[in-house]
Length: 347
Image (cartoon, rainbow, N blue to C red; front, side):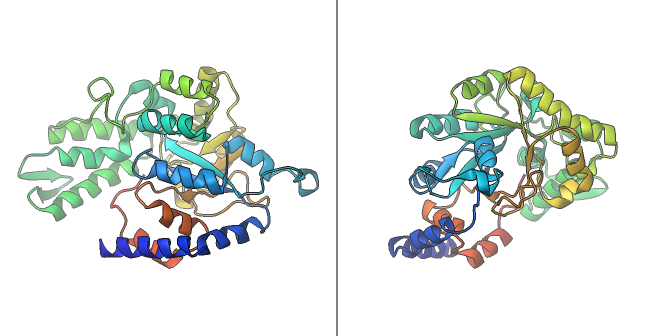
């Protein structure tokens, strides 16, 4: 708690003394750069962050921003264009709160956003697999649980965390979607608890979007969509090259069929290099995407690999002044310490 207060105090000092603004002006005078923010849920401090970004950055749709970034410098031109640093707001996975809260904010502030969705989850309304372990363990009332040859005392916070890690690891390391789904079905029977589904937990903000909601958002002109595989496997773990290409290519086909517009962008699930590997990038290339984004924390330039673009984390839990300082390179050391002690599980 004291550490968090210190970060906010430092950010306030930077903001009110003009250091944050000065650092932003310096970045604007640098070579062409694009800041892509990677959010998941539309909660917490998002509205205050949007107000700051709208005032100090040029918020763009992803496709529009990337077209501008990769136009040859000789053809770019700057006449009459807003010279603020461009920023794109992306949301991975397609959580229900992207519609109930994110879409509300997009309309309120007239701010464009891009959401990377997973057709398999839209269709079946199931709870996302990377949230499953924590959700299942949180529902357990037994005193002792045995899983994979180990026994866990549910009265111990350490054991509950260890069980959560063990379940998550098995789902995460599956070599096919079928293997993962079979495991999730089995573990619910073993533990005697069930994951939420859209029919019974429609108001849970962590449930997937519906096609009706997606079409409404797309029709507004404020929300654009990109592909994020059919079932969100970790690409590097998929053993069958045919399944790997199917997950990437079919997600695009389904979205284009449902929305009636071309899908040119792809977001790698989880998104670090160890989750993608060269064959994941090659599969995205083979599927015909123009651009693909990772979760590598980098600004993008015209020299960036269009199929391996970086994104900076969008953290709705941080104060907007902290975000403002972080985006211009201030609080860098503090942020690295924060990440070391971040949440136990991240998507």
